[in-house]
Image 1 (tube, one colour):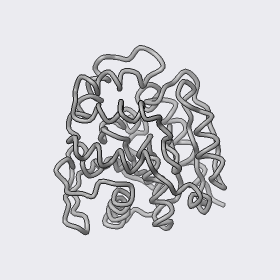
Image 2 (tube, helix red, strand yellow; image 1 turned 135 degrees about the vertical axis):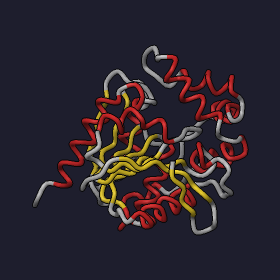
Image 3 (tube, one colour; image 1 turned 120 degrees about the vertical axis):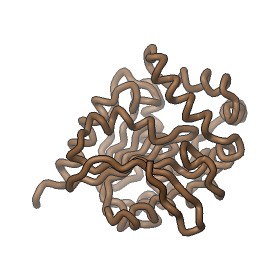
Image 4 (cartoon, one colour; image 1 turned 30 degrees about the vertical axis):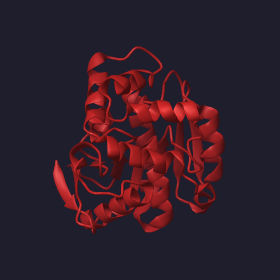
Length: 260
């Protein structure tokens, strides 16, 4: 892991692999870290420059100061991309990370050359019921509750080692950081702003998750988006179907790099 110092002094961790004209920034979701992308990045190979970040409050950035919210996460990504000199990047993001990516594309459009949003939390918020909100809040800082929650994020039976990896990442997220981040993404309210995003985008909707919401509340608002339904997959399709995610990324990469 490498370290990056943000403008407010916070030290953030990221992993950089590969090289080439295709530059990809990977953004994880809530109570996760960069390791959720390991299988995808491995499948892309060394000819792609991949940067996978641990958002502040997560993974090896768990000790970073706040705020831990969408705006600060997006600012951190912009500063990292600027520091590495890799703009514009294709941002590949999952769940809450996709909400961060949308915020980044609005706040720093010169940073983003394309978006691949997988099971994205809408910019209009998650729409959880009070019971659902209480359930998710209770997973923060509780390994038993977190494991039960994460085990339900897949369409089929999951290899125990993959679930262990997810739970380990959740265990690195301090409860206060997890709850602060949750309030930000679960109650996001900038959907109308996303209509201004014009870069090519792919919205990937796992079939066993909530595809109708992803189409209506995310893809339909983006002027240059394709909507893809991913069969036989749950919320964590990036771990359940990494080969399919690699294919989707390669298609976007090839279209963006193709000479006009």
